[in-house]
Length: 336
Ligand SMILES: *[C@@H]1O[C@H](CO)[C@@H](O)[C@H](O)[C@H]1NC(C)=O
Ligand SMILES: *[C@@H]1O[C@H](CO)[C@@H](O)[C@H](O)[C@H]1NC(C)=O
Ligand SMILES: *[C@@H]1O[C@H](CO)[C@@H](O)[C@H](O)[C@H]1NC(C)=O
Image (cartoon, rainbow, N blue to C red):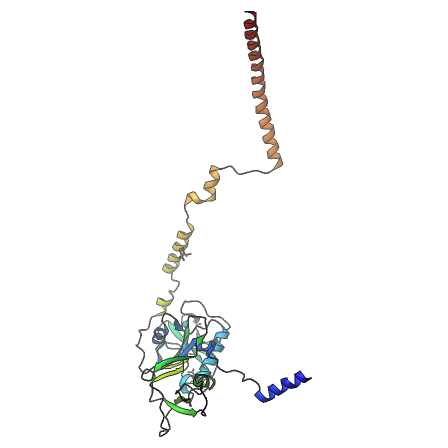
């Protein structure tokens, strides 16, 4: 009873743990949402680095995770225009000729994923984006500019804070990094404070927290530090990303034309045609296979006996002659 009381005391004083709060290293921090908006191909190239790729959507779990990341990113803004108005490019596109949706490695998407073909576009390829409001994947012309989301290729948890200089992160129209909260004196772990506070993007050494806003209230006398430690899952690049040329679908995933089919068949044939001397058939011509049947063994025994008998008779009949010859030789020697 005493034990129960203390449990209740702890629950009542501390309160139920928040349903979800960001950890210092968190599954969501394997993702990075990028601005400014870019075409799908530009986004693809902007993400692709040794450790990063455009976010994969191989399962519903990944869709929910991406959704949570976008929710977290929207929390940084006073006006959640970042991802809801245009959608967010992910690693998927659609072959317009047959509405087949696939990832960059041409694997068909999980049929459980909600993909809706919402427009027909130029060329053979439509690109797929995530619409948070509708919680579905929709298609659009790949040249449309959208926010995009990259993902770390490493499964390991990533630090939710990273360091940039303010000049690399856009600080000005349409968004400013503005003072939002001043934490009471005596607080020392400003980084944890920022991670725990959904609106906090970055902080100063004395625990003033900053967030994105359309316009800062001027006259507060504080600006973000020139080198910021900030939440890693949102990057607002100061400059536009270098524009990449659109690559047609046929260069990502060749269509199964008769020529492509023939090449695949040739390849398989080449792989199946192995050295004739390594085949079992060839090896069997050189060795005899064991035959474990009783009848086979009996026939063998009879054969061997017959052969031995014939030779035995010949040898034995010779033997008597030989013995006689020896005996007569020996007798002659004695007589001398
Ligand atoms: C996203 O979905 C909502 C609700 O269905 C819709 O009103 C909005 O136009 C969609 N936005 C885009 C960019 O598809
Ligand atoms: C692809 O889907 C769209 C929208 O649902 C539809 O209008 C179009 O006919 C489909 N195309 C094919 C080849 O199935
Ligand atoms: C043939 O073998 C090569 C090398 O072992 C492999 O890379 C290729 O994918 C194979 N092709 C087919 C069609 O199995």
